[in-house]
Length: 500
Image 1 (cartoon, rainbow, N blue to C red):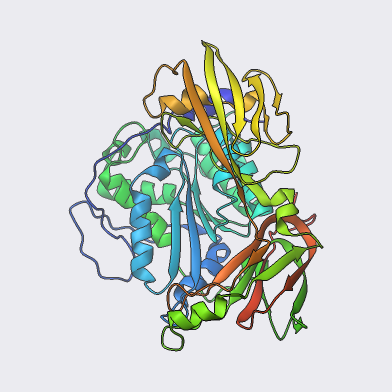
Image 2 (image 1 turned 180 degrees about the vertical axis):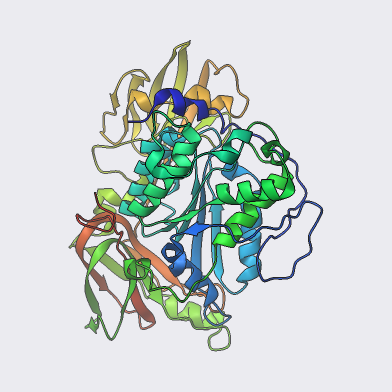
């Protein structure tokens, strides 16, 4: 179990700090750059488990104008990850790999420590289904591990974990021998960085960017105190952001000399014509995993005009079933977006919404009335855009809507905290909270039109299936269907890599 006294010290450290900073330099290796006064130079940042990000790095390195691999990168964490260093890493990736089709998002939630983020990940992390997750958070060590485990169960993402940067002088000389570091006797940051994070990285086969060690070396070389890189007790100033960007950029490196990464087996393509075949406009494929995409041939602008591509697609709808059911009939293929309060902000006011009966795409709204601000208590009336009025309840009591489509638990309310993070105090007497139900599959689709030369046109047929064996059936005509890309999370089934 985590130590609540130590953990809760960090609960408020992720609060917002909006800094107005000049554009940071690119601290990448082997590439000439202009360096501003804030630029930093760093020796190679220690990286454990470089093999565990090599599928991502291969896709990036092998991209070329005629073969622009799509690579999805997600930054996730709290206020440290919200800072500008992540945008600098994104800029550096785009500069280093100009031919890759990069889809990069930062969904960090300042102030949401591991205990909250493990719930927010339900709407933020797993639906995005990244190829690479770059992750840092403070909070309870067991909840941190829970989030990484769930990522391994729900996605095929490669993971780059970040150790903490330094904030105190005494951390410069902390012990590093994990055998002598205990949760109840060691400083919390020492336990997390020198023992727990390496254990999590090993258990779940992730890469670990040891920017903490790089921080110590940089401070010693420059004869600086940790405060020289900080804007307050925890957040980075411009110089600290440049150093963190340099550390992460340095860890995102290709090493083709290693054995093929496990992730190459987590995502594979069933070739149409070799692995699976059409028979009388029907294609059947058995697969094991929780996601399947239809991948189409890259036509290229020289070989096919947009008009020709459009003519091919028109009237070519393909019907989809999985295990005999269309995706719309799979409860697992629906999910919720963040439940956001009005007025404004990106912080969810309710976490981990559940359901007991089949969902359908619609918008849900809670009409809220504040009963008490200390302790927090609210009454509400629930409305679905299609379902209509679906019940009344209170935030301090379990709630199941009349339709069974919405389930809310008392522990999942974060109203006052979410509003405080955007400066709304006290909570209004009356306000609303809204979210959407979104499908993660299609019953029918048309061959997509290539948006950019070299980028593979693809359609996600189903994402979020129970991990296991399934039978996909397509009915229609799709002469340019190149293959079916199957995603099989390593911990989606018993006995997967890293299973306990």
